[in-house]
Image 1: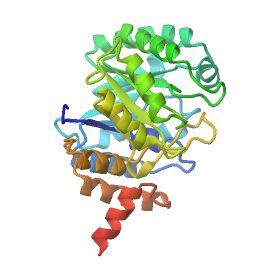
Image 2: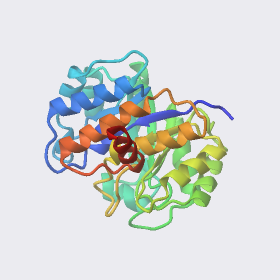
Image 3: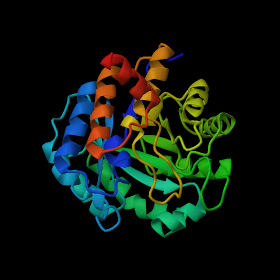
Image 4: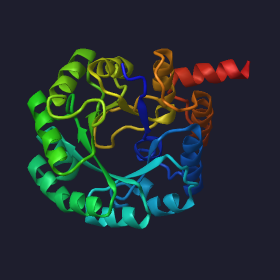
Length: 301
């Protein structure tokens, strides 16, 4: 077993985008800096989407300008179109993330177009990103289930993955946007995607913990050969377009699992626990990470 696992920290973007009250730019900058210092090699820091749709992300340029960039860390931005890409280029991000849904119903509700139309829209974005020398990542929403149409066919996931790879994506995210996936279904989907992509280097798992299955799904994906996973400090976030979807799996919980398996992440769990406690206090909410809370209590004596 390859003992290195890459954890992509998505808290600053996917985690904070659902917060109803605006989070201060300075707090966002400090959050990214704390996560960088903890050793994450990839942080989804901002998005360049219309502030009309996601007002929480309106200060992406200011956040990127204010952070202390750590050598060895990739800073990513979600971009929906050419305008977003221009913002990402101006902010000097290292990687841009484009996104599509494996569910036609979700695609229509989320970005008001079909899956095929969404890929056509991303074609010029992908080409321009690659020409600019940026790393390109493609996110596959609703890969394990959809809030509008129910189960997502495995063939639809594979089809979207192929489309993303043809666009030039260096990495594709198999995302359980609403957290309905199970270990068996995760294996089925990952093994199918593994027929067209290298599970160890090109595919990542993005799991929400709505039904408490995220860690089981991560373990199932690990057994299939996946070595890249997304997580969010303190379990922040969800999807504004997926009713009832709770937060992403907590980084502290994922790190505790990985380290317990003897896998190397390069991330300081103790520093992430402190960061989870800090950001939860900033937002005035309970920390959603079980490992984070237990380890924080243990540290407090």
